[in-house]
Length: 216
Ligand SMILES: Nc1ncnc2c1ncn2[C@@H]1O[C@H](COP(=O)(O)OP(=O)(O)O)[C@@H](O)[C@H]1O
Ligand SMILES: NC(=O)c1ccc[n+]([C@@H]2O[C@H](COP(=O)(O)O)[C@@H](O)[C@H]2O)c1
Image 1 (cartoon, rainbow, N blue to C red):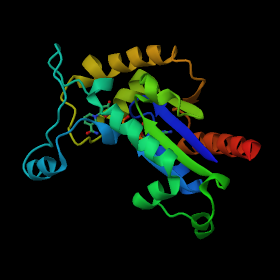
Image 2: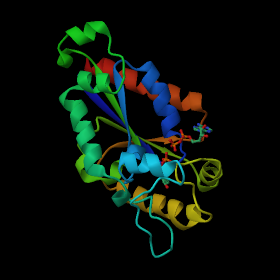
Image 3: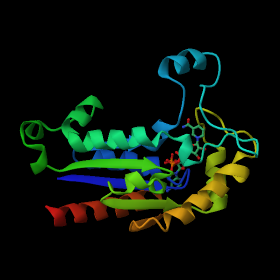
Image 4: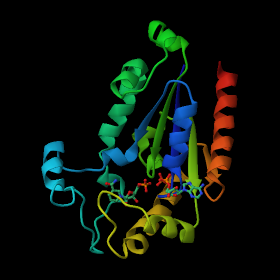
């Protein structure tokens, strides 16, 4: 059985934190991070360039003068969908090529008779129609403006936030995408990102375990 879990939510809501804990606890669990699909230049260019400067990117500059990171066109969503399709086609091969250990009994068995889990994690998961069909379960972590701004101010991205980006671009785009997402047709389970890391993890882990038990 294949099971795909979406962990979406606001920037700095705790998606990566939750995902990292789930990967350790769930069997044969792979992950796809949306952050890996920002439109950056090719690997070699990035490597040589980043020795001296910030890595080059292909992100458009908006009328507000800021690079528009928080829009779907900043991401290579086709490549992201293809990565998910690669996992669906052959989760064992995908796991091996991503350095994930698959248990020996599973390597010998038919993939269909085993549980294989894929977590797809990102801040714009439910705003790209071709991806919606993949999710068996869709979580969304939210935190209020003040907490989000506080956490973001200490975060180091490969390209650091210029002053003012949060209020001019990041938060308004979050509100816009969240509105659009609410009409996307998916049944989304909202998680309160102000709860402790343990509370959020326990809630989601228990929920996934119950769902998987019912499906087996
Ligand atoms: N439940 C939580 N309570 C308090 N801080 C949290 C919680 N979850 C994550 N954090 C902190 O918030 C920051 C962003 O977390 P991260 O998981 O990287 O968020 P995201 O992947 O959604 O951007 C990190 O410093 C992390 O330790
Ligand atoms: N990963 C990068 O290279 C990079 C660069 C610039 C901005 N960002 C920010 O990443 C955010 C999304 O990632 P998180 O949900 O992990 O915070 C966006 O709000 C975007 O502004 C990421």
